[in-house]
Structures are given as C-alpha cells and as structure tokens.
Amino acid sequence: MQNLGYLTDCIFHKLNGVIEKKEAYILIKTPSNPTYHWGNLLHFQKAPKESSFARWMEYFKKEFGESCSHVTFAWDEEAKGEIKDFLAAGFDWDEQIVLQAEEPQLDSELNKDVDVRPISTEEDWRAVIDLQIQMNDQEKTPGFIEFKEKAFATIRNNQEQGYGSWWGAFLNGKLVGDMGLFFDDENGIGRFQSVETHPDFQNRRFCKTLLKSVITHAIEARGISNLVIVTESDNHTRHVYRSCGFADHSKQCGVCLPKPYWKEHG
Image (cartoon, rainbow, N blue to C red; front, side, top):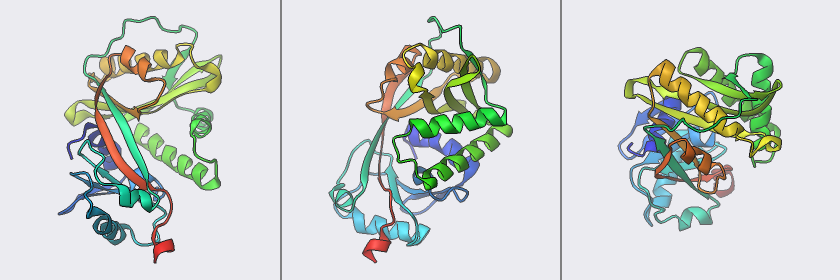
C-alpha cells in the first residue's frame, strides 16, 4: 500500500481491526463495526480494468460473505479506472483529496474566545457524537446512529490507550467544533479525522483555532509535525487547511455499494 491517504487510514485499521496481505489484494476488516463501509473493504494496487468487476466481487464475497451490508473497493493508483460495471451495479464513485503538512504554519491570529481541549467527559463525548451525526449528509437512520456510536466508542478506546486524542472547541461551554488526531509514532506521522464545525458557528475562525491548537500540541507534546488530512474535493474548509500549511499531496480513489449485493443478485 503506497497511497498516503490509505496508508494513514491504516493507523486506525491496525488499532481497531485486521489488515491481511493476500496475493491479489489487501483485506481490511473492522469486526467491531461491520457496517463501517471504509473499514471493511478490499484494497488493490491498480485501478479496476474492464475485466475486474466479476473477479473483485468474487474476492469480496469470499472474504465477507453474501450477507455483508455493503461492498467497498479501494486502490493505490490515482486513476478512476474502468468503473462502468461498478456504476451500473449501483456503486458510488469516491474521490478524496489527500493534504499533507510537513512544516505547519502557525503564525495567524486565532479566536481567543474559544476553549480548545481534549474530549474527556461523558457529556463531551455525547456532544461530539451528536454534532458528527448532525453534520453528516447521510439519512439519520437508527442504523447510522448505531454505526456512529460504535465508531466513537472505538475512538475513545484509542484515546485512552494513548494513540491520540479527540479535540473540541468550546464557546461558553458549548461544543462548536471538533476533530481527531491520531498517530503512527513509529513512522512519525499523524492523521486528522472528521473535522467539523457547528453550522451556527462557521466563518468565525473556530475551525482554524482548533486546528492550529491541535497541531501545536502535536509538535510540542509528541514531536510530530508531519500531518495528513483527507477530505472531499469540494470541502469549503480546504482554504483553512492550506492556511495552516497543508498542501494537496494526492488523490484517494475507490467505489462503494452501500447496500447488500447478493441479496438482489443471488
């Protein structure tokens, strides 16, 4: 695996799941959260070819079974490949931008009204989960809420084991923004997760204040300044990341079918 986005995804896969190198692909599983689409997938080196669809589907069925609630494939290559058969089967195309800051810029004015600190109390964790659910475009079904709660139970455990922290920006005690930063200490790199700002508090430098405060802590407390963020290409906060020294590094490509396949196709 060479793609910087997927490499830093493995920080979490190693902590919370299984990564197994097979002959044709890398198997990634998160047994504690089987409905996590991008935590239960097959990862290939090359983008799909015209002949890939049937073969990749058989690989996935072999590893996850016919009852799996989704099908997800990713690859290192920064190319779309031949995905028409995947799109015809209902897959969604996913392309993310990988940004990297090797020398973060921390010299801009911050919002001094906001209190930045790691999430610690039950009340704080509940506020984070609620904000993350609110800001997600996905329909707020019981299954999605359960997925988010399981995901943050895992994140909380990772924090308690010392692999990083989830941070909040608080204004008069109210959570207005949050993000996670977790580390691969052996390789000296950190990966941000799920940067969010409450819609009522955007465009007030809260996100920049939170981001720069967390970066400063990573450098001072952990000695790590090589940091990665992965985000959608149309994310309006990319200018905030760039102002902190992040630059576009590469693309992260994949496809996901967010429903069972074999239930309909036998």
